[in-house]
Image (cartoon, rainbow, N blue to C red; front, side):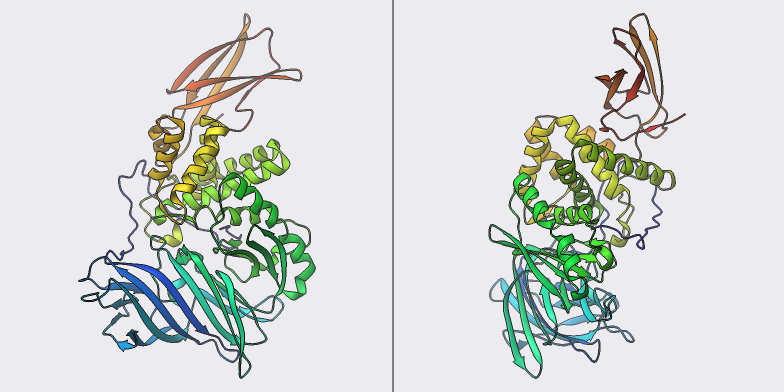
Length: 532
């Protein structure tokens, strides 16, 4: 996901260095696992009320405990009213806790461990499903669930730890075009000016990234990559510009498939949409903000970011909100990797230098680690730390391990956790396996410790050598890291790597003559700040 300029998070974070345990406060359904959702939704032109029928297939792990589903209760104008719950067409006892917005379904006290509940409900969603008009005045319906807004319009386990297959059956006036998570399996005119459109996604997905898009669209198949259709869905008024701007999705998809591993979802639709974000990485149906279409191909980086999420965040999904850097940090860096692939190493350096400046400025106001377990609200886990600093950690890890080992680790990580859930320790373990290197200290200091090295340094030339003094000036932690030193003479640049592991370090580098200049980190591999 990319944050738009309108979505600025003011996050007050505690000054913790290495938290001991995750603070994700979501009450998990230890009793059961949702296997499949089928959401039948009826949409109208003359009002914003939706009518829903959800079929939820559950596998019970404990026959004595109920299953909890999130659904925002009607309060005033907004919210949902449950009218019935059945199991195999038989009414079942259920309890709706409107204070906690939780629907409690009965435990599996007898019979099969797998049961399918039918929940009928209706109401006007306040969030999650954006019912509005496009910038051209066309009525529209767009799913915008991240992070936990699905509960405003869909009964579900609204947390990324419980992933399930999903099917949308959308009944709407027949003048609308409909796209949704999954592959289209039906489009039927059913009379009375209505059309039924069904999409089914066979891969398990977290509810944060399921969606629908219902409005008037212009649609183009951009390319088929294997059996995956890559398409553009844009407003008719933006038809040609949108098709042109979104066409780069084909190149991005090819790059990630070749370098990371197989794509997990039934299709990849790139959709112009009403969204609170700059982009939202819905599985197989990405939303891009309305003004992303310009005709000038200015959103290549955004498209690369959201498509990278299909691997990281959607398929290999963080098991706790506090570890969202496994989604956002990865998408940020892999967008840079794609751009490096297309435009060369200077593009990587350019993007990372911009990000390094943002990390430094953010830290001055919010001194906190990437995994900050003081945060309990998932709406507040996004920050420069989880995006740009998370990306920088991957850049430093790549430099530490080398390209071959880094990419081998990335491929194994994705293969291991594809279509499942992951935590930071799991990523660390995979990278240790492929590299044979103990990475505990690396992850402790860059992921679980606030800040970065703040360096004061001097150099002088004496008798055929450069004498370098480097001091770490931050007071919260002494970092250990390799530092590349560039020695420049004319057009020649020689690089030496030194290891910094203390508050003060002194080095001597032999040279043939006095250099023109000495540069710290000439190739942009280290997250640090230079203090005067």
